[in-house]
Image (cartoon, rainbow, N blue to C red; front, side, top):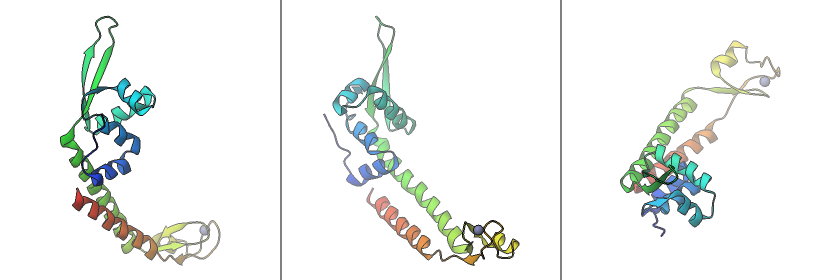
Length: 166
Ligand SMILES: [Zn+2]
């Protein structure tokens, strides 16, 4: 049985943060299931499913029950998703991304950046070499970083709108 994650926004955030394959596995785990069965249902290798399950487990998105097979002595794992953790995970991911972006935006707006023919450097580095690149000998000129700033600003508003919808 496939049970979709109720919010499509949260589903998309999970796919962006982890991967589409991780979401596909999660959607099979509304009911407890063995990793082999998930592999069969998704027509992918059990080893791939186990790797994905370990990722999901590290992020507290799934839990398992372990039982020992008395004949073989091997353990089998019955997995289920932690419905209550999914929203938290998506929100934490978005908030972390937003903090990173705000640091980057700060850097881009506060400091001047210079470029030559081969690299981008902060103002101090350009000044230290008298505005001439020691590597390519071209003059350091101020970079226009308005495009970079615009990109960050639009990413911030995209993530904020996702966060509001979760
Ligand atoms: Zn250079």
